[in-house]
Image (cartoon, rainbow, N blue to C red; front, side, top):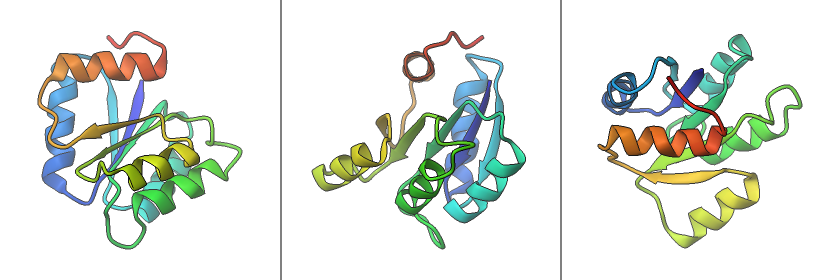
Length: 126
């Protein structure tokens, strides 16, 4: 399984990788904003899941998701927002764009995270 993590915080990306690597063998690819996320995604068309922050410089999570969902080659990849922004307006906008789920930052329960990812992916992670 290949997961793209899009977040402007290097520390958040590192923490997320450590959290997941303890529970499953995954290939984690990274980008620090939505624009770079689109470039990384073009180079990794076999990505199985995208986990993105909302508030980032250059291109935020919403702009990133809009671009992904408008591209026929990658619009079927499930997307999860991993963010501190959990208000109703964010949730409603995310649902309209096709975001599968919101996860709050920080998320420290690795096994619970794997269970959530398996649910979204409809596949076992090992």
